[in-house]
Image (tube, rainbow, N blue to C red; front, top):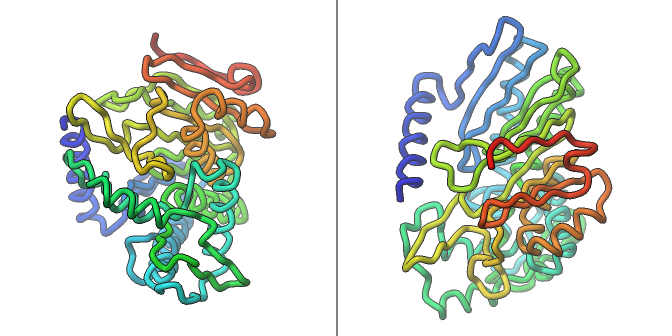
Length: 340
């Protein structure tokens, strides 16, 4: 409960700050850099550019954030995803971007053999970890939600999407932030911006190296740390660091921790002795998808998957705060443990 209180207080302070500056706040980091923050997809987004002071680049990045929130968020009634979910099984024509992300999501559903499933919308809504203070859903309701969770129900033909089970509900929250970060970076690179960071609620994507050619040092949060301190750090250039953890949204009841990473097979949070999975790779959408997929697979199978993928590394943290790393962490990617 203390964690949730700190989170709420921090969000109130941030929202009050934005009230003075509009939806987004702009600040100068140094004489030759600029940064901007805003609130999209229920999280704080911050973009910092180190090789320009032209705020128009930031404005465009946040216009992209608003565009994709309005297309992809299941909580926006006029979004493509909401229209599909409300169509009662009829076909809906959607944007190219929505099709691209749906196909990416389905590819990760396949990779996890359904342990990650983008039709988990009804189950996620039932648990509602953004507002749930400790209510475990009724068993019958969980079973009803499970019955609608099967990504094979998504039928894509060109730009039309149909849900074979009219009661299914798509939720792209597991990969949308990564997709938006990649789109921001692609835009900035086209404009010649090659130094900076994009942070979407903990999904960190870096543009090139720092201006002096050195790495960005990105912290990996210590699970359940009230002040968000880091347990370890990786050093990267032109790459992304994305974490999924049980400490992000959770409650405890009768000594049991219930968190937001749900098993679509039984309807309950995964219980596999993991507290977080961090992915280091090139594209943030892949980091987003893989962090949840690997969490759902557990330490052994998740690590096996990572070792089979090119240019992809991972840091797993178990519930005893032990750190487990893939072969490239500490070799090709500099790694530092910050505390025992």
